[in-house]
Image 1 (cartoon, rainbow, N blue to C red):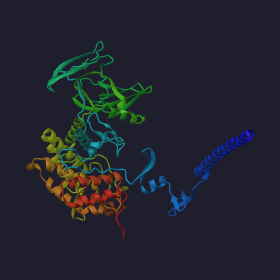
Image 2 (image 1 turned 180 degrees about the vertical axis):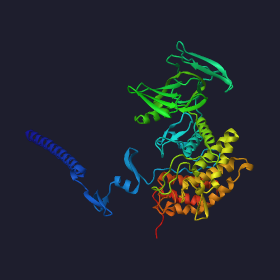
Image 3 (image 1 turned 45 degrees about the horizontal axis):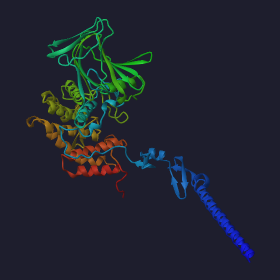
Image 4 (image 1 turned 135 degrees about the vertical axis):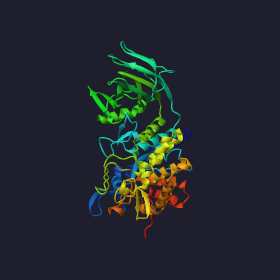
Length: 565
């Protein structure tokens, strides 16, 4: 009996172990099978295993040519690189919360909605965002005039009143929008004196100058290598100084240092009539700016980073020079001359603003205009403008700048120049002025006073803003015809605005009416300028047409279109 129980116990033990082993094998085998099936499904769902879900397809574009497309089911996919050029839309791949996405936009420009009424003594539109001096079509900032030299229509360079005014208005606006600049006087010949390194045979002394009515530094390097001043002052690169030479071969050179590459870049101001010249000596470049004869005092405000970049571009080295990696290493003067008010700052917007204002005063002609000294070709040779033409846009923006200069300084010559600048508005474009008529009824102030007229929209509105600035800031008894000219222009603008609307954008001008040519479609940056100008005018004129049209034109920038029949 005991033996039977022992056999039964052994049998039961073997049965339990066998069941446990079978269960374990079954369970593991099932898990392995499930994992295998999961991996198999994963592989099947991957692009590599499932094959292409799309077919290559040729797309015929208007029966004119073919491009490569793709078909997935009933959907056809066209490359965005084609759509971008064909429809002038824009797109890019971006990251959003760690996920890649594609951003599509119909325009690349911005609309700046005003938050308050336009103020003629405040910022000019959104010009605080403008950096006129770094534009490719600006050759450099002249050392003799202190304003941009344009290459827009002539490679050798010329002074373009529109660009000069925009340069000044941008810096006026930056002065209001930017933080207070850092500023340090290095040498004024009187209260602040610098530690100049004077080699043997050279000399520096501080004398009273009866022309400036102040003490100035007088230097004479004689036959030495020059008198130097170390200026390790961080990253501030705007240098202002008053300078004149008493000899014919003087120079002032600033040596800029690239802290990453340990290179030295000289920028010199020399007695020469040459605007800008770059010397290459064994791979070492030096950028020279001409000061003319140098016998009179020159007041200069220089952004040394811009000066260096323009030299790089001229020498073919491109313009990739980081401003934050540059600093002034030292300054060197040669020859016999005088120096005053040597100041280093993070910016000097008002100095640059007044350079533009003073240029406009000096270069206004007896007819009140700022003549443009290059030929302007309009519409493939039709209605060309010979050198000496006026631009209503140039007149208007000059008046906007000059009225601000008068407001800030109180100096009457700025006011007088602005008032005189209205003269071409009352003179027909056929007789050398800027006034034309649409359908012999609506007066228009021409940015390009062609015959027949071209009716450019943005230039016309800039001229209206200039007239408004005169009305707002000039003494009431000296406003003259500014109010009448402004009112007439606003009436014409409201009547003619519909002619600039294409249903999906705007046209730049009305040459399709006057010259019988195809419409000149405005680029998105000009289209947004039209909107921004209308929004500005809407803050000083309550007529709903301004905001209504601006709103419709803004919607075009998001792809909306006017309704069809």
